[in-house]
Image 1 (tube, helix red, strand yellow):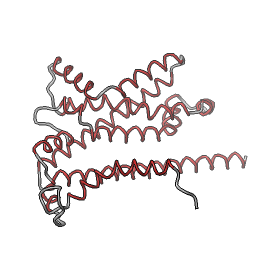
Image 2 (cartoon, helix red, strand yellow; image 1 turned 60 degrees about the vertical axis):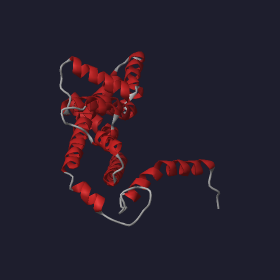
Image 3 (cartoon, helix red, strand yellow; image 1 turned 120 degrees about the horizontal axis):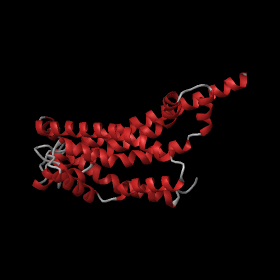
Image 4 (cartoon, helix red, strand yellow; image 1 turned 180 degrees about the vertical axis):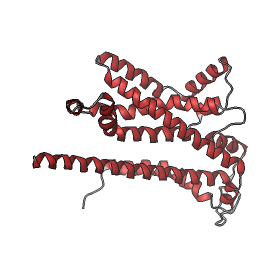
Amino acid sequence: MKKPRFSSLYLIFVFIILYTPIFYLIFYSFNAGGNMNHFTGFTWEHYQTLFSDQRILVIVLDTLLIALLSSLVATIVGTFGALGIAGHKKAATRSTLLTLNNVLMVSPDVIIGASFLILFTSLGIGLGFGSVLVSHIAFSIPIVVLMVLPKVNELDPALLNAAQDLGASKAQTFWRVIIPYITPGILSGFFMAFTYSLDDFAVTFFVTGNGFTTLSVEIYSRARQGISLEINALSAVMFIFALLLVVGYYFVNQYSRSRRQRQKRHAQAEVTLR
């Protein structure tokens, strides 16, 4: 019997640190008491309060809508951005564009949020749904570029040459060869952008206004007013939702991978028969 390696113990320790606060919140979301000091009994009361709170339900829907729209737009723009970066012939140009993209990734959220606030204010644009949506699209695009670019770089030029030799136009090559090949990267970029948008606080905090807010900002506002186990219930629901997203992405990725393997085996079989 092999002894567990230090790396395995370290990973277990890290996961315990990360997940303990989450399970602590979920555990007390079922507490019949009004605090997180002592568990006095099991109850669904806080979940009933949560689902009867019309304001929080509207905020959840607005947050999901912002995340969905921003991730869709960012995925489209980021995919073409990755193709554009990879398409440059000069290595120096590709390196410069990628560096500019990475700068946005490492920039503090506070700086990005303040910059958007100054921009919208100077242009006379009101803060609300539109300002939050534009901001989320902007900081999600670099994420999509980083997810899609490796798949674009893995694309074998021989596939493109073969498609052209068989008489495919540029549009047909793009939609029937390039897009199917980089689809796993596109899906990864979409899910990453959706996740980042869903839990963003710093940027959103600067650009919300006119009665519009997102879930992270609302939780922050309510937490400042005092402990409410309704927030625990909300956190539990969002955690389960995020878990379902991860599981869904895993199965989509597995299906895409198995489909590519079947297509590859089919192509090899056709070559063998010939």
